[in-house]
Length: 298
Image (cartoon, rainbow, N blue to C red):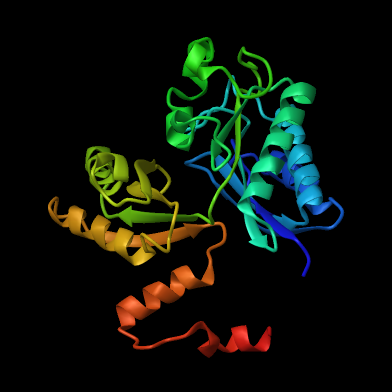
């Protein structure tokens, strides 16, 4: 069985299609790499790319994407609703087939070293690749964002794991790591009140006393004149998508606000959606082998 790693780089551009396509081309044109998906959001001003490859090929493709993003994105003028600290904000490696988490951690460290040395970009390691507990959580690393990092990076406890100990003004900093498959799930609310969105996000996310494996924040979708609860479910097996959805819905009710839609960003594991189907349809004893397309692909 061939080794297979998933990589999901997030870069800080969701508006300029020419720049987005040029960066994604680095993955499209890479040898032995399969581009699975990419999606952009104008309000977030962010693009998420998903590709799979053998470990060495994935590492090479990720470096080329980071390099191209550093050439085309200028963080000195970049603005958006999504927290960010660099042109390529975060690059996680995820074990998919015949690859261990430890191997993904090694890949993250090797890529981080190369990015730091060759692109002169400060790099932090996170999740399973983190060098200390305070750097496990991406939100903790990114606190202060690009603008705040010019001072934050000078603190001894925030010395980068690789690269220079000063901000790259144009490209910012990058976070690289290894993690469990993540579900990026957003719930849209029938209001434009950001105070409500922020209050709900605080109740839902783990750090605010909410669901253990959920990170959440309120986001304003200016084009639609509504707000959104933007969530990362870092372990969908332990905190299911439907559970996060129902908690947002429950908290919104106290403000008389309805859920008007939801979206998945990037790709989602089949099991995460099957769990939702079982819950909402009350299907008993369902097995993944009952899915027609799953049988046809065997």
